[in-house]
Image (cartoon, rainbow, N blue to C red; front, top):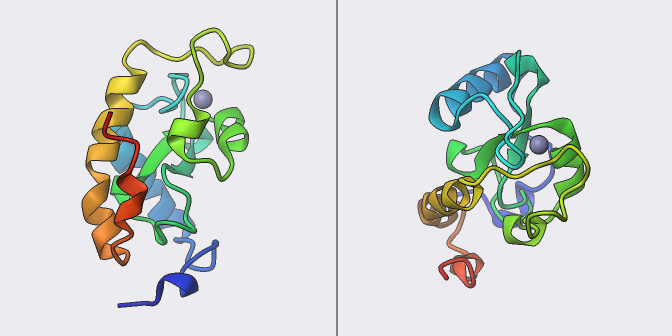
Length: 132
Ligand SMILES: [Zn+2]
């Protein structure tokens, strides 16, 4: 089991081919659109891979902690926790309109996380506050 402190940052970034595979898997799971604003990707190469919970807290590139995001959303979210990034409808940046189902999808994604958290070293405190 790798120590938590070692895996942060992008040192273990997957290869370009692996990232393509990850984007395909995520598109199959969540649809070929930005997880946050719902913008559809004409080409999956436009999509960025976003860590739902920042990598410093869940190291690695597990699918359970990854979503497809458009570049503006990925930049806007940066290292924030998803619940910090989600804003009330109407407060999204111009052109970034949340889908009605966004919260449902976020909830489903967060439900998948406990396993990833345990595998990353069991920082259960991350789950606090997201179960409401
Ligand atoms: Zn977006």
